[in-house]
Length: 321
Image (cartoon, rainbow, N blue to C red; front, side, top):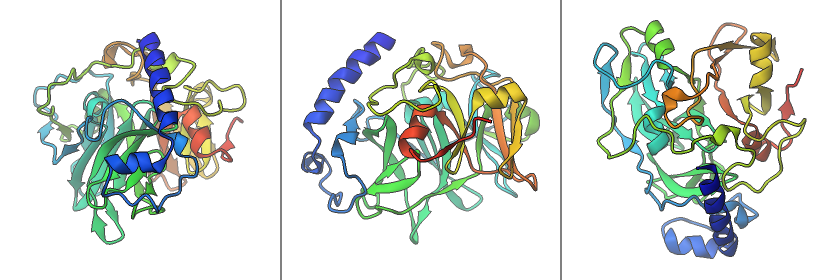
């Protein structure tokens, strides 16, 4: 699989460089305003392989009670959404691996639960922007190996890792990231015995399998030709990003958690890597991170690969010690 991804990346890289011009993308996206953009180097925009909506986002997902029958294994990761006054919800990575975006509504808040496998970036956004409720799809484009989303209302492009509009009418607009996190299915249901879990979508996909076997130990990310991170950090090492700071997960794990910069970052064993073995449940244990402020409130964050942090926050602070 690693060799296949390398060959595919080389092919798509050459194609992407040949199309490093917004006029090319405009033919494919006639309703997108390419005169409004923050992109200065169009060679950064590349096709990830599938076309627009080739990876289908999920709208209005169904949910099951914890006690119902599930195929999810105990160590599989889920994205947990807990909003005050609402029943906690788990969105399994076994589904997000193949759909990448779920458009949902929780407690009257329209949310987009997102996961970019190539950056290990799992974040939840409020879909309300500039007086509109947007719904998001997968564009099929990548920038620094990170998913480029699009909204169906204005056909603008959005960078998932930073939650910001990068092309079109919504250029410069920011999505509000909600304080959600990734944990194991066992951890979620132990804390939320009355919780809800997203039901399996009605698509023909190999749910529970990882199409990127060995990806998070590969030394070169897919369709990434930027700099490697500093300090000798592996490009696919996980880091905990809060704002423009990044803590290496190896440090947090070794120290049993850290308390600094007004935050308490904890680590607990029990969550499998979704990007290691052929099945998600067979991945090695990378553990669960929670980030809270001094008052014990959950803080919006991401557990992403180091190369992606360096690409999108080149002047960011590395919290090495």
